[in-house]
Structure formats: structure tokens, C-alpha cells
Image 1 (cartoon, rainbow, N blue to C red):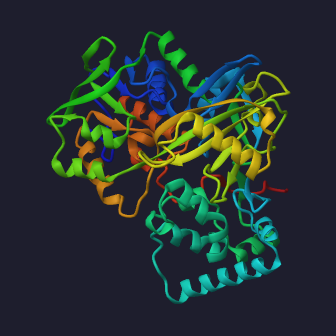
Image 2 (tube, rainbow, N blue to C red):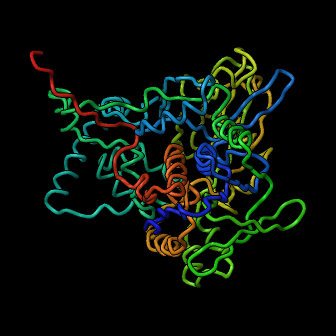
Image 3 (cartoon, one colour):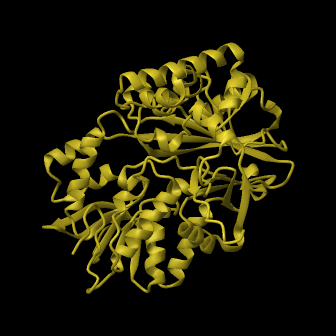
Length: 497
């Protein structure tokens, strides 16, 4: 019997052979778990590489090899079981990295996630007083006249007050999403930004809350040769055990009959090929999955798929003959005059990402949509734009230190939570849930702004459903709790202590 809400258990008493669409970390985790259980699994992937958005790019130069992650993917999770899986896969390549993430604001550095004292110090006493006063007014107004938090703007103002929202969140958020904050849903803000309450902050400083708060942001795990090694090592284990990861095999049709998927058609260099299995797992974009059903999905489902959008990123990867640009693992740039939104310095994550200590590099992220002015820029224009901002506006580097640069385009990197997205998303999911042998996983596959650990978790649980367990995948990353801390209850004192 299938589990509801995308938690199908498969046909545990029959064949468990599985076809997995997409070789990102989530899809590969499904195959890895099934492979360890001795189950036949085949992964098909349109690209000629594994890892998807979480892959590592290598670039040879006369100075040696530089490595770049697309946007940077650190490993942190509240789930101890997932930590053990990560350690098992990465094994001897595991590093622990101290995290420093900051906002570059008006020539100053502000801690990210935002810390009250640090933020107020950066803006000066007059603006600090205004920020505290209007935050207080916001809380009073909320108590007198409660209103629903609907938009991203509502959520940020509710957490931080109008002044700090405008200073530290508005410009950056609109740079990321390409829309005003009042047109974006506030659903993910609680998970992605640490809420502020001046009263609570003071109270916790004097009388700490019950239970220890464990930060997941001060330190994180990372593979020494880049985050793409997670996908590469899982692929090695899958293929060594006799299962298959087929690259250059993009899914063009998903065939269905009644309540079951009966096969998929993939396009390869040799032409079209139909593949069949008992169970199917999809990590390809949910909107694409809905559109490639054969026979076609109902008209209202197709219309819903057309209404959902993703945001693209382009990374400009700059190689430098310089020891270091900043000490940060990420630096967020809020200035509206600067086209890119943030960058990370791979050497700060692992010294093995550059050919030697006298070199460093930057991965600079541009957020864009199909057809907009950033997406239409050439590689040469983007590299020059990034270097120009770094040299002339930010004054972080000298042009003579630049060895070279190149771009990587990542379409559909982030699902866009535009106001009203829930109804079409639920319509598509209800249609997909009607198939008893199809599960959707990952950020693309579920249209949910997952971190890597969430994508891995959906892949793990989907595999366990096929092995006979009953997990509701829709509950992964469904809570409203901030991602980067976890509460650990204190144990009761032992007798006599």
C-alpha cells in the first residue's frame, strides 16, 4: 500500500529495481542506499557529470589546478544520522572548517547571520536608536492589531523592524529574487534568517533559556577536494557494486498508465531509448516532470507548471595570484550598484582548492532569470564586470593579480516562492502523488528551497520507502524552525551531584 504525500513504499514483496532521474546528491543518495541493500538501481542524468548544482569544477592553468564549487556547499545538518552518512562517504577526505560569513555594508563588515549588537554598532547610534524604536513599535502594533505574515517583506519587518529590514535585507533579497520583497512569499524567511527580539536577546544573556542552543554555523564539514566529491564518491560506490549511473541520458518522457509509471524515454548520443523499472524516483525539476508525462498531464496541471518559476545563477570564477582576499567563507554584497550578490573564497574552505599558498580564487554569484540583462551577458562581459567591481568599487584586489576567469551557468538553481505559488505547487504535487511507484526528491524535484542535507535526506528516505519503510517525504524541511541552530535539552542531574 502506498504511503500518502509522496511517501510511496513501492512493491516491497515484488521486484525493487529502481530508476532514478537525476544524478545530484539526492538522486545519488537514493542509489547509494539501494546499492548497499543489494537492490538494482539505475541513475540517468542529462549532463555529462554528476553532482548537479553541488559539483566541483576543475580548471588547469600554467600555475596548476584551481577547483571551484558552484556557489559553495557546506555540510551542516540537525540530523545526526545524515552526518554519519556524510562521514561514511567522504571518509579520509573530511575537513572541519571554521565559518566566517559577513555582510559588506557601506564599507563595513557585519556578521551574518545578523547579530543585534554587531548590526547596531555598524549603523551608528542614531540609526540604532531608530531601529530599536521602530522594532518596538512593530511589536506593539502586532499585539494590538495582529496581522498575518504573508510576504517576504512582512516576515523581515516582523523579525527585525522596518529600519534593519531596509538596511540589511531588502536590497539583497531583491537582488537574489529579481522582484520586490512584497511580491515574494515569506515562507522560507524563518528558516533562512535568524529572528531578532531585543527583549529575548537581553533575557537570554541574563537568564539563559532551558536547554543548550547548539550552533551549526560556527564550524562545518567539507570534503578537502571540493563538495563535488560527495557525489563522485557515491557514484564510485554505486558503480563498483554493479549498479549504473548513466550520464548524457536526459529524460524526455515519463510514461504512465493508471496509477503507475511504466517507463521513461531517455535521449542519448545514440538516440532515444526506453527504460523500465518497478519503482521511480525523480529529482529533475518538478515543473519539467509535469510537462513530460505521456500521456500528457491534465491541462490544469500543465498550467500550474507554467506558473511556477525558478531563479538562475551564474558564477564568475576568478583565479588570483594573491594569498587571500578576505577571511570569509561567504561575503554578502548588498550594494545595489554592484551586480553580483555574494562570493566565497574556496581556499578559505580548503587549501587544496588552489595550486599553492600564494594563490587564491573567488566564486562570484550573479542571480538572474532567463532573458534578463545578466543572463544575456557574455562570459567576457561577466568576468570583466566582476573584476571591475572587485578592483574599483570594493577595492578588494589589484587588476594585476588576476590570472583569469570563466563562468558557469546554473539554470533553475532556486525555486521562486512568488506570492500565490502554493496553489499551483499543491496541484502538481497532488497529480504526482497519484502514482504509487513514483517519488519526488531534492530541491528541484520538490520545488522546495532545500539545503543539501534536506536533499540527501529525501533521497535516503525515498530509498527506504522502496525497501519497505513508510516515510512521508513532504515532511522533510517542512518546519518553520531556523536551520542553523538546534535545541539540546539538558540532562537531569545525577543523584548526589
